[in-house]
Length: 209
View (cartoon, rainbow, N blue to C red):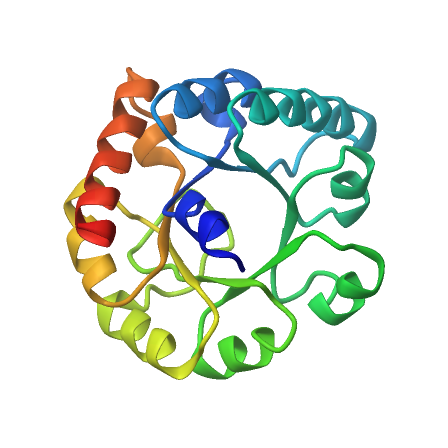
């Protein structure tokens, strides 16, 4: 991935309808300085997902931000999203690459998964770093040591995810991560914009200073 894109991924916000409307959460995070949004929604029908994604595309363009769609490459293509993010049981990255020319992120949990995924992925989502209740099917936390092992085993950018709070930002970047993905530590806060700004400030402090 190009350096400007990597910088936008330093804080990667994933929307979650349990904390509010996707569009409202995304815009508040963008006002706080976030420049990468992932739309993740498991419980709506395809038509509803498409319309939300389309609105998110407009909002992210207004802020010169990246939009990624979780799991659904068809919706990503339909709304001209910048990228798609998939898990270990979704459509394989090599198959996505044949039909989609945007960025591809792949969730990984182990060194072996990461090494396999980096053959076709533009970045790797690694975690959960810490225990999290955001994902119902979350695997066991790998901790900072697990993150370091994966960072040292691959050449593609690593985005850490899972149970991350502002207190973890320093240790995550010291471990070599290129970015942090956040859900509840931003979305669940009373002031979403302020929470996002706090993460962006900390991430830039520890990543780019």
